[in-house]
Length: 191
Image (cartoon, rainbow, N blue to C red; front, side, top):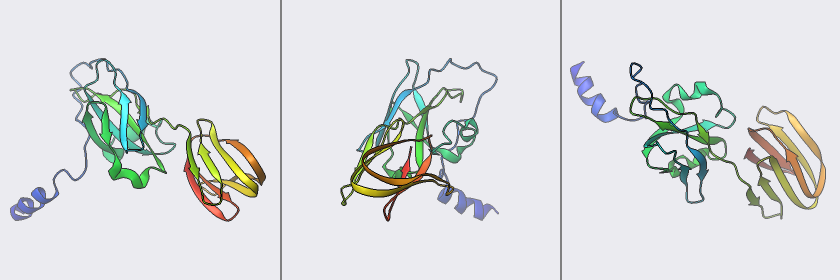
């Protein structure tokens, strides 16, 4: 047993971030929440720090799950902590299309503020066939150069939009992941 612990622990320590233990017998410091969480094109996540912010917990949650407070009670979605108001998130680029970042102010007693979720701004994708797809604050918009068959599905497979469209088209959508099929091309988008 000792030999196992002597080799296992040094080889596997700190593989996964953990939540700061909560010290319940001390009062909270009245945390302000961060705001304006934005991931830039350089894969640096930034946020506006509250006046009393020193340390922050950064989470990467499946789109649509960022308002479920249960997701913040375990380290499942915690990707790290940061001093200051930025973090390089390039290591998580494989999840950018399906997940959203959330930042919470963390005090020395382990208390966390309410989460500030990554803002989804108008992100535009232009494809070789002249199709332009934008993720906007209200849903998605398409710029089609010719009449095209468009289908929008939830990730559960439920068809929510279907028709032939041309020119500029907007679809209001709730927050979540969607599959957009334009003619025979399939695109995944998170709103």
